Length: 378
Image (cartoon, helix red, strand yellow):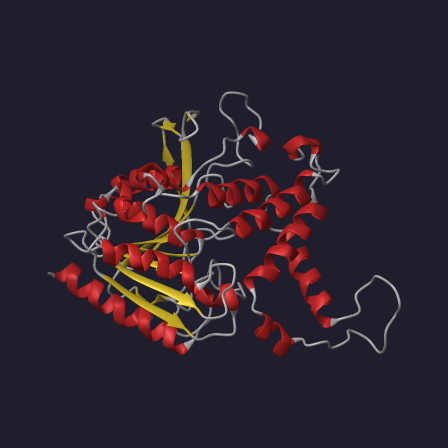
């Protein structure tokens, strides 16, 4: 077990029997959110931190589910006692978003209206829908205002949306390796990934589970392509270069280079643990995110009522969510006269850097969270 871990943790499924009206006009009659919590909520309930996950994330942010578990939660290097998001100071909440495949209501759960799994009938959800459901979670936990909402990538988009939709309920927002909207190139990448899944013969119009099928090939290809975009060329070159997987060229189409072996391994591993319909939903939520759209595409106007203080971080080799996209948000915050701290971290890890342990990045988050803690005590 990793030193400084929160230790053994247990997830909890929170039921919500109140209907949730979604952005697309559909209504979920009820839903569950799977969560994990770390640390202790203080008497004033002023030290709560919400962790929002990225595309393939979930509620298991830190710690272990058993003594036998080899790998801790996906952000264990960031969340725990003495870590930047210090569980000796903060009450930390991680959740699996609606539409997820790790316990929250989604395509793999039963539709109460049919008695069968939702499958492809699960409605398309947006970042605004997630934030709305998260406010219901906050109310359930008795948390009126988050000391901070924190997220990387798609998680950062949720943190930003929180500050716009519920400005009096967020004291600080940490938006890491994210963007105020996707570029056309990013939307294109997402569509190629979706097409790989949708055209898989085993997709069965999204009802593959009812036919005991899994669109493994499509999901595998989608992940392989996505994984390439999360990495940096320098990092890939340093790690793999043109190293061959075996001696000499084989003059065929099997695995010949180490990078091919790595990507196929990542694709196989992902296809074994993730749901294809959930992948479709998550990428659509990414595509639709554009909080400035309802303000005449003016991001400064979208931020006019924001009350939160911001920490924005980007990474030098992240070409999927480039530093320029973070700077776009920073410029709009400054123009709207909102407090913001910005750091561009030099890293060779690409987009995945927000999950890594680059010293300057970890140090910057820790320093900012010290300020969050001081404000929470005021």
